[in-house]
Length: 386
Ligand code: NAD
Ligand code: MG
Image 1 (cartoon, rainbow, N blue to C red):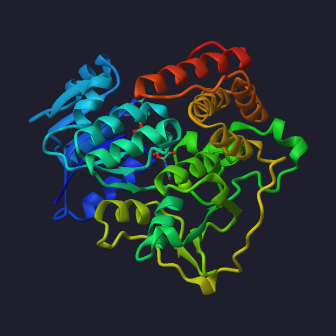
Image 2: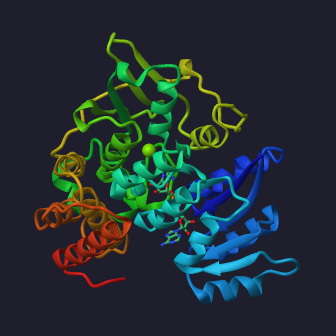
């Protein structure tokens, strides 16, 4: 029986995770849930899954939630301490890390340190602190399962093979809504245009990251840590149909790929039940109904954020955390209508240029660099906090 804590249960990944849980009541039990502002949905989830514990961001939300619930209530906590308590709850044996952004780092690290297995959706954890997190995973002997569809595809393509026989990892990317948009008009696209992802339905931040292709940049860094492979051996292919979710090329020239219709329930279920496979309700893939599968090299002039991610990986240590924080600030500002789409990558680059790479020996040092980069990015974008 998997006894789950779901960090970020009201988000896109959290909701899909709970659909899988609901479909297999004999396999899963929900111990703890955490959420941000969507208290109505959290209330419904509490009524359906009866967790022992829930955590929300603020004390006000905790009070409000308590008033919304009747009958037997779970323990209601708040703040970072609440997230940590949920991540380390004694009955939990697997934590689904599905908070968005660097806010996911501290509770995910707490889960690992408490010896919990982790199903990782929160890629920012590995982008900001990959070397520290992978060391903790080894020290604790826990299992870290990828939820990100590309990394799940690589993980599945590695099963039964020897890591030393891997030549390259090829991550696929849809190219998002602006793959063929006139480059000179990208500075004028609206928030709505950028949120209209052709294949995947996801949270707002990752949807904007997909439009800039920073998402793929974050995923290259995520792959670097998950699979212990250097950046030169991680390629990105644009594949607009999102049917091949990623590939592994071996030294003999053979390539293993994982295919499926784009639906996160596949990779989420694999992370939850590995090595077992369970029905997910995902639509079957019928290749004969497709008009073709196509592949292209990414164009860095169109997607400068992808190039910045490779640069951050080469610069190393603190630079990926700086890039990630600057991206979070810029994406939030773009979603709020305060900056142009093209300001996102431009401001990330300027923030990175202003940073002197430093060693990161602890999560506290990662958080300090993250804070510095947020301040610098706001200064560059001439915006105030919030
Ligand atoms: P989302 O915005 O839909 O949900 C985020 C969740 O985190 C919500 O429950 C929200 O309340 C909570 N949250 C946000 N900020 C928080 C904070 N400061 N403290 C505590 N909780 C907070 O996001 P999502 O699309 O589900 O993505 C979650 C993570 O999974 C991201 O790291 C994303 O990159 C990754 N991911 C998502 C998908 C997808 O299909 N949605 C695919 C691959 C990877
Ligand atoms: Mg992905």
